[in-house]
Length: 268
Length: 263
Image 1: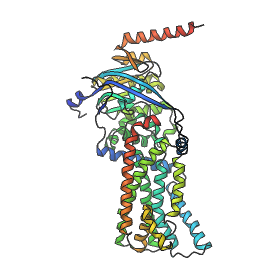
Image 2 (image 1 turned 45 degrees about the vertical axis):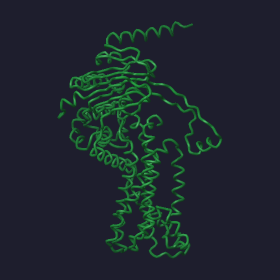
Image 3 (image 1 turned 180 degrees about the horizontal axis):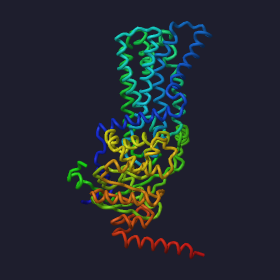
Image 4 (image 1 turned 180 degrees about the vertical axis):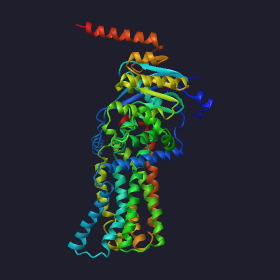
């Protein structure tokens, strides 16, 4: 067999089947959750108290101090805050994954994309638990259950697709440029204000509302609010842009990850 | 267990004219801010290229234990990393058939805040086992590591010996076809090391492939059927263990004398 000097040919037996991959993702996700909550006194509860505290403070400022009357403000805020937290947790949490698992990446060959995706997984578990608590709150408030609530599932799926793409993208970017997390923290904070989280879209002058079309996150947060509190779905054109954006995000993430992943052990 | 003959005979590690280049970036912008600044100012950072492995051809058949020897920085670990799949070679033909167990660092897949028990699942999954397999092997993993009393405590409290025992035990239980062992025994006591040697020997007798790196020449002599001697990325000599190790030790002494003899 003659060896061509400048060619690279690798033949390697496949190491994982889909079942093994599913288990890897599951075990990584659980490990991320355990590592995240183990060291804090109240664990998971603590991460639920923080957003509630935020709602009380902002609610007090808006309703109490600024005398701005939005009906049911607390609950309006809460339903949009949960998907928002899912988003910001994932985006910021995915940045340092490769650095944290540097030892593994440098020493063991395994599907590396499982690391950022497990961050999406652990934030998703967190999100689902908070949604369950939200439904308990609904029993008290009270908000009546309605079959349209099931539309939250496709809305969440759109968000998951978007976040998988972003996690793949930002985890890689952060490995190369270590101020990515700072930059993203600032950007996420800015987006918190241009996305209808602490205010419903209806509070915005009508000629500005059009611009939310270009913010896929607005479609998600306002979508949650619409479905849960007004029993209405997002406008089809808003949904379409959000779906297209999510798919593009995922494609970009996969593409960037594929290109840069082989060099990862050398960069870390 | 249920391995057919076809699987056994299919195992192979084959490198044909494999090269590996490292690029060392001097002052690579580590921040977006710096990268943008460098672009605006037109700065180009220096890239230094080194060939860590040059034109390496080697073939290891089932049942063989092959040792890699050579001074630090000669490319041994790079070769192992390439075979393990962690690093991609720059050029050449590489064929690796079989389940690879990379033991390049003890407890590489461990998370410090999780317990030994949780880490058995975590590193097992990263090594390529599924949940059922890990559960099935769990007792045997703990027993082999002699970890019964401390498997419930967080890994960050472990000594390096405990870490190594548990890491090695998980790795060995993935039922690998190809075992890649890089110096991880260095921190173990003699009892543990001889246990590992016996285990590796048994794996080879079962038709597995074992690749072994160590700076302990006695260990190389006890374990390896043949060795490859590397020097700045090139395999300069290869052959049966005993004569080559003798030469290697003799050369080491000669180099020492030369250094001492300098004015």
